[in-house]
Image (cartoon, rainbow, N blue to C red; front, side):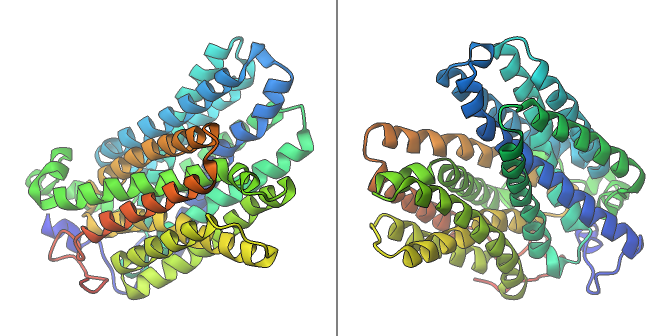
Length: 421
């Protein structure tokens, strides 16, 4: 295992595959994450139309079920892809995942019942959920260790780009919502074809597979003392991080409206939040690579606590509100991605895909729990300020989880890129 980890790093960032191979990896992984961002927002963009037109007799409860099934599928895919990627390769699993969710996405508009609609979204979600951890793993393994945090955060900017594209297209197609699924499905198949010809396999994975079987790390190794401490901390932090991301993206406009802000202002804050998210991803990766991933993640969760607590206070200055919401996006969204960056830095190549998949999969449970709990607070009439109190408490839990993480990579022979904390 030592030899696997030691060959997985480079001080210069030069790979034998050449600069061109690295460029294709960066571009194609980024576009894949962009497609996921597009898909995970598309349902929210069309639900009002589906309910207004009573498509398939869909009710609000049906729409909630469909949305939940989509997220369940994503969680399943995120957990399943890790062991498969460590067994069969990152490249094959990523291409297969893109093809799977693209095909079933194209079938969604053809569903003849709400049950079939939900089932197709569930199956498409499985492929979709596999894409992000596979993309993050490939990106990390094509970068020198000293740039792994930036590899994760820059890749995730594709998610927000996809969300913006969906929003803009939804405004153009209005009631013709089926176009959104056809565009995504066709684009996914085109990208998969390009990946087949241009996406190289991870060299770290190839080296890990060439190592003697006794040096390979099975999935059960994650539950052994050598990895268990880190695993628990990562799972809790990922759960809390995605709870915040999805909870805020789902309910921020409503919480703002309950605080007394007019609807246009409340909706605008969601855009500001996501703009802050993109800025935070770029800044967070840069700082983490220079100051250490664990230390930076702790700081990001700590500032998130403060910003979320501030949002519980009614502000009479629009400028002050914009600044606080922007900073909330900067720190909350990238705190979650920095947890992924920690995973790619901590685990050796032989088990990295499995570890990242488990972190993403458990985190997806938080993406379901967050909107549900916040929705219950809104339904009880206490969304503001208790929704923000709840979010601040979640950020505290994320901070404490990161605090328990080891400061150095699991294998002592691996290159250390951050100071002990």
